[in-house]
Image (tube, rainbow, N blue to C red; front, side, top):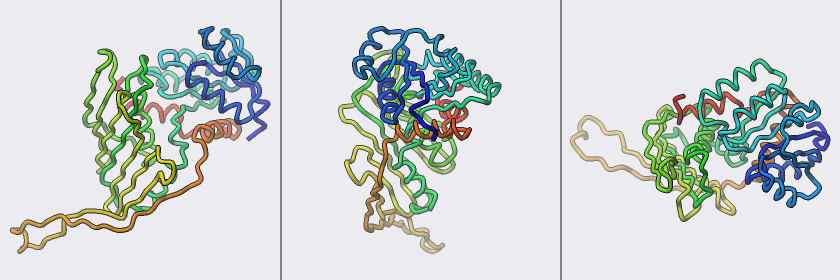
Length: 329
């Protein structure tokens, strides 16, 4: 990575996620950061937090037109993202935008078209779990067939808040899990059924239970921002072993259980008999790995993609496929 302290960076959005991005850019050693937001109150808060380490402004055009600022981080509501991304592309910026990118597939298709005309810039969407060391290890375990043939996956992502008004719980939370599935299997699952509840606001869904299929794998995704207990869990059932990834565990976040169940094959004469499922219990295994901060990994990867002119894993097409699970247009 080229010397990061000299990179001139624009961050759109001084809210919750924009503040997190700025904090991590500073951790990486960035020293030329300007934060742009329409809200003077937000700018005052972020300026107070980071003191003289950043510049703030309400003037987006001034910095978008400045060719010295080649990096643009966008952490604004999806309803604002299309216009910002379009302007940044037209000004030949390298763009990192937090998911969900936009609310519809039409806008992504327009951005893809604009980006193809400007091949000099990098466009990356922030699906942070694709840069998580534990998720990478799970992919390695699956690729090595350690669990045997995968037959079922259960994913749970719940908490009390944060509750968003600009997108529903599907685009806010379930897109994380679909991006993980895309990363693990390099395929997008097909949505078979979606049960959604709009409890707090009739215009937005707060809880959803999704039933999907990826090849022969059956998948359930349960998401909620109206839940008393925080849950971040993935359960993967294979024909040989089972795996649990509990993100909230202090240690031993990944556990492999040497357990499985099956019905024995029966011959012609035994078909009249009722066979019981057999269950095998073996020793479990804890997977301990040295894990780095996922967002730091993600930001480093973005800068490396720009420097090396590499197309990011989570590019516009990736985002289009993830959003396509939930949206038809």
